[in-house]
Length: 129
Image (cartoon, rainbow, N blue to C red; front, side):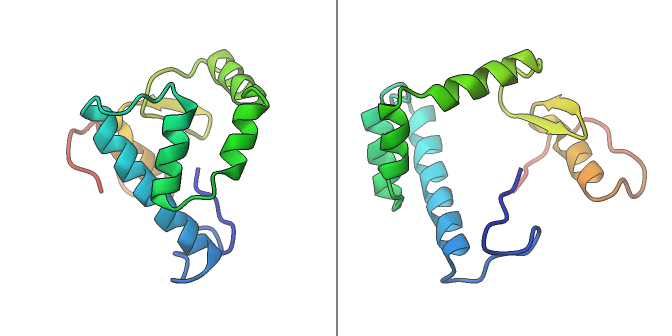
């Protein structure tokens, strides 16, 4: 689900706005985590490691640190809700109440989000940007 703070939903934030800076930080953070995790160079179970990556990506780490100090109660609650909803594995997508697990469902997810124009796509294995 895309957050729309600072710009209308679906609109790309303009460079220099708080939303665009947040998007840039998210992209840097995601790139760092993705690469290091799959190279087995990142211990995602250690809060200090994640905080370091957040800082490296240019994020304000205070909200993350505050959540860690609270004991992760909000995270635990969200995990319970996700489990109770029958959601498992990554990547997973919930679209219109339907759960899709795996990248191969992205064409269908995209088709639904675009208004179901044309025939429904089948499962696909292709490169997504």
